[in-house]
Length: 586
Image 1 (cartoon, one colour):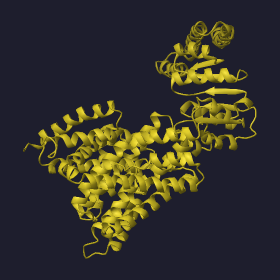
Image 2 (cartoon, rainbow, N blue to C red):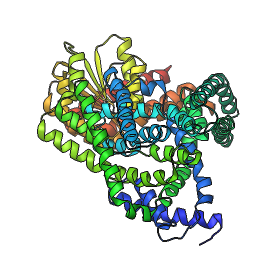
Image 3 (cartoon, rainbow, N blue to C red):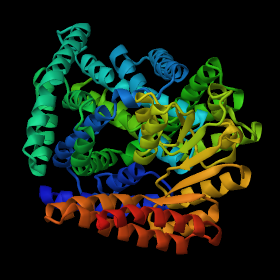
Image 4 (cartoon, rainbow, N blue to C red):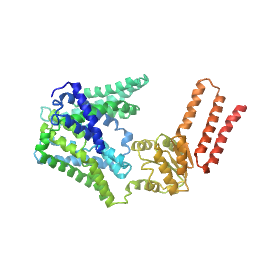
C-alpha cells in the first residue's frame, strides 16, 4: 500500500502512541514497544506501510542523535565514578566476549569481516533497559550496580571504535585494505577531536553570549549534522561524526543545556529508528527460521553469561554476585541494531543474516528485565545478608569520630560539604545519584555511592560515632523517612533537615528533626532585598520589613513545629527581630 511520506509518519506516530503505553503497562521498556509497533504497521505485519525506504531515511537521523547523546554523556566526571576493578571488568567483558563469539562464528563458516561486526554488535548490552531497571529497583548504589554501570559506560566508550570497525569491514571486499580504512578512520577522528577541542567551545560561547535560546538549539543541530556530514564525506558513517561531536561537547560548560535542547529531537528521531527496525522484522524469516533464531538466542545468552560469570569471579565477586552480573548483562542491546543496519548497508554483513539477527537481539532485550530480577533473586537466596556494596564505605572511613553525616550531595549538600571542609570538620557524604557522586568526587569531597535511607548504610558510615546528621535530600518523603530512621537508631544525634517549604517543617519535626530549614525562605528574602533596592526603597526600610517578615515566618514555623521545639524557635525569632529594631531607632 503506497502513501505519502507525511501519512506514513502519521501511521508511525499513531502506532508509537498505542504500542509504547501498552509496553509500559506490561512493564516492558519503551524500545520494545517501538519495535512491536513498527512490526505491526510494517510490510510483514498489517501491511499499512509496504515501502519503508522513506521512513528509513528519516530514521537514520535517530541513529545520529542516539550516538550524539552517547558521546555527550562520556564526560570525564562521569567516567571518574568507575573504579579500577570495575573498569577492568568492563574492558575484559567487551574483549573476551568478542573473541569468543568471533571464534564461534569462524567455526560455523562466517567470513572474517562479518564475524568481527556480529561479535561486536552482540557483545554490547542495553544501557537504556538495564539502567532503568536498576534505578527502579534502587540498585544503582550497590556493588553490583557500580559494576553494571562501569560495563555499560565502557561499552558506550567502545561505540566509536566499533563504528570504525563496521566501516573497515564494509571496505574489506573493495580494493582498499580494511586496515588502511581503519587507520584513515582513526586519523579522521583525531583531526575532528583536535579541531573540535578548540573551535566548538568558542562557537558555543559566542552563541550563548547572544542570549537567544532558539539560536542555541539551532547551533546544536548544526554541529551534530555538520560533524555527521564531514565524516560521511570522509568515507565514514554519519553516526561516527555525531558521536565525536558529543564527546567534544561533553567537557564544555554547555553540556547540560545542549542535552535539554537536543532531547526532543533525539526522542522523535530515535523512536522513528526503532519503529523502522521493527518494520524490518520479517515474519516469514522468524517463522521459517524459528529454530535457528532460538539457537542464536540461546548461544548469545550462554556465551555472554559464561564470560561475565568467569570475569566477575576473577575480579573478586563472590559466586552469587557473579551469577547476578552474568544474567543481568547477558542479553543484547539497542546499539546492535545500529551496527547491523550500518553493516548491512555497506555490505559488511549480508542482509539476510542481519534480518535474522534483529529478532534475536529484540527477543533478548525483551527478556532483560526478567533476567535481572531472576539474577537478583538467585543472589538473595545464596547470600540473603549480602552487604558487599557497603564494605568500601566502612573500610575507607574506619576510625572517623565526631563527624558530620551529610545525606544528599545535590546543590544544598555540596555547599554544606564545602564549608565543612573549609573548617576542617570531619564529615561523610552519602549520595545515591551517580552523577552527583562524580561531581562531588571531582571537587575532592568524601562522597560515597550509597542509599542514604537504609540502616545498613548508616552502620557502614559509622553513624554511632557521629554527632550531627544533615539530611539534604531533595525528595520530601525520602527526607522524612531518613530522619525517622536516624532518630530511631541514633537518638544521640542532632538532626538538621532540608524542608521543601514551611508546611514540610511539621512532618520533619515529628519525624525527629531538631531543626528543619525550608529551602525557599531565605532565597525569597534575598531576592526581595534586591528587588526592593532596585525600586529605590531605602535599605534600612528593606531590612526592617524583611526582619518583620522573617519574625512572622518564624512564628508560623513555631506553630507548625512540635510543642517541645516551640520555645527554641520563638527565641530565635526574637533574636532575628532585634537588629531591625536597632536600625530603626538609629
